[in-house]
Image (tube, rainbow, N blue to C red):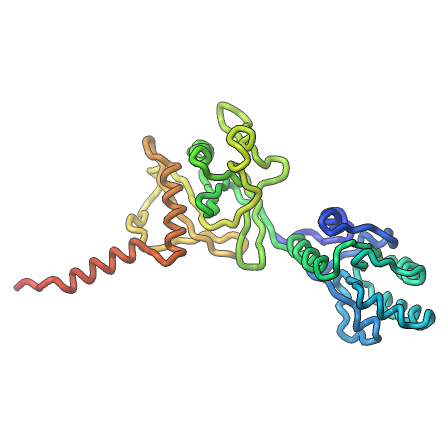
Length: 316
């Protein structure tokens, strides 16, 4: 689902550290809504060309814009300030710790537009701010299931309560793989093409094991046993043996699950006593990895079989 409205206050609160943002004025406008996940440099607008001004974006002032304004007489600068702040954009940032003059701040506060300063150079600020905004605007949701990273393949494991998910994940962690989330996985659509899974901040690095309780995986198995986030490459569904009907035993047909509009390979593993689920999940992940590299064992075997049948002499 889409995220709630992104305000300047939220952008400032969540990313002021990585962007080194400091509020200079216009605090009353922090509730303004950012409507586009990118930024804009208002150089053309300051020069008087406002036809295509990106009014829904955070504005970024760099050395070029500030130097240009300094070449203008004070009265002319005031006119340019009034022209710029005539558009209700969300907020404005001065990079390189450049400071606005009093007329600029006065014009901003008269329109309730927040003004910030950052020590970052302009292009670095733009790059980091754009990534931060894309994260804030990305569609997201929640999936019931646990997630592990196996040989670089992100595997979302689903199944009914008591089917053996936790035991399988523990066995995978003991083999050197990493836990991403337990029971509930938060999913985010990144760049409109891949789904990334993570856990909530509250439950990160922890697992609930029936009969034992909550365990801290990072403290028990080491820092490498956990991972903050991972792209979902495979969905594995654990089902009781008797509930699985008409399963494809050769693996000729690839099935998919859809998460946030993205089709992700899906496999169903029948469960019954004696089956090593952790090993089967590991093999499923490696199988997907091989398929991505262009290897399809079922297809290759079928082609060899068809070739052999075609070459065999026909009986009378």
